[in-house]
Image 1 (cartoon, rainbow, N blue to C red):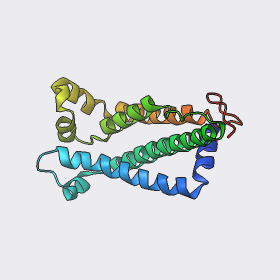
Image 2 (cartoon, rainbow, N blue to C red):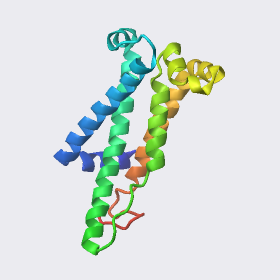
Image 3 (cartoon, rainbow, N blue to C red):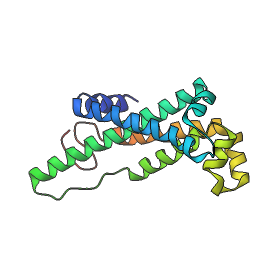
Length: 171
């Protein structure tokens, strides 16, 4: 857990990354909220705000913050690798952790479905049994989502020792 805090502190100590994190958090938070507004027929932003409870807002905020932290750390590491590769004349690499990002985003969408109508509208392609399962086990889906996001942060932060173990870049 201390590795995650070190990675967050190092990344967000730069004002550019801090500003990027705030913007990414707002975008993810808004996108997760708007998914529910746009996918449910007859829904509006005001109505969605009215039916959201404090737990829903808390979950949405936590998911937005964790997703944004993960993306910001990945951008930070990518930029370090790019600078290192420029200095050493090597081509730039790809962002590692694409699977972690996609699984975190998909799990985030699953966990933000706050009511059975939202879940059925968003996940109707899965079939009625799957929607009933998601509605009945929402707590487990939310816990699983938070676990996936924390696991993604942990795996990204493992690269923040004195030297990155994967790419051998001095951090």
